[in-house]
Length: 258
Image (cartoon, rainbow, N blue to C red; front, side, top):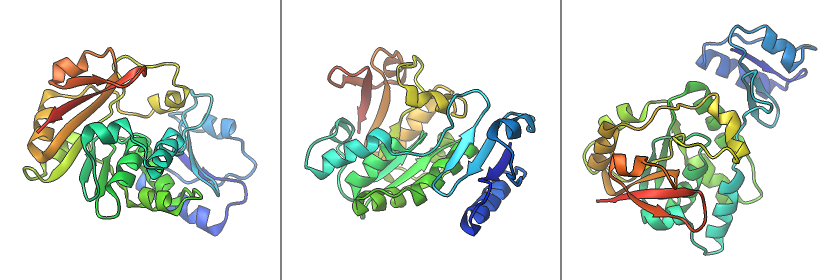
C-alpha cells in the first residue's frame, strides 16, 4: 500500500500522511501529477491511502468509490436522540448516561457514535477494529470530522478507536467491568442493497463470531451483550441471543440480558 496526499498538500496534511505511513508501515509517495489510477498501478497490492485537506480516503483498486469516514445515518439517529426521540439500539441495550460500552466490531463507528452520544461525557465508548487500515481511517475521521452540532462533534471525539481483535481485548478485561458489549460483524447474509457497505467489504474482517468471544463478552458486561445481524440470520440461535426484529427493517438485534 502507498500513502500519498493531494498534489499541493498543506503542512498539516503532509504531517498526517507521514504519521499514517509510519503507523501502517507503508511508503509515503509524493503525489505530483499522478492520478489515483496511476498510483494504484505502482502498488503490489493495489491499495492506496490518500490524505486530503478534508478526509482520508482508501482505495483498493476494486471498489468504484473510495472508503472514507462519514457519520451517515448515525448522524440522523443522533439528531433524533437530540430531539428526545428513541433509537432501537439504545432502547434495547438500555444505554444511559455514564455507561461504559465496548463496540467490538467498530467498522465505520456508526453505532459507536450513537452509543457515545447516549452515554454522554460521563460515559465511554471503546471501539475495537482488528484491521489496521480501517482503524486508522476511522480514527482520523472521528478526530477531524465537523458537523454544525458541537455536542455531536464532542461525541465523535470521545470515541476511543483501538486496533485490536475483540477476543484479545475482552479476554484482558476484568469481570463485570463494562456495561454493554456490542457486536455488529459483517453479516453472514449480506444486504447488498446497502451500497454504503460495499467499499467496506474489501477491508473489513469477515470472520464469524466465536462462542468463546460471546462467553468473554458475557463475563465482562454488567447489563447486556447485543448483536446486530440480518433479521433472517441463524447467528442469533447459534450464539445464544434472543432475536428482536426492528419494525420492517432487514436487520435485527439479538440481546443477552445479564
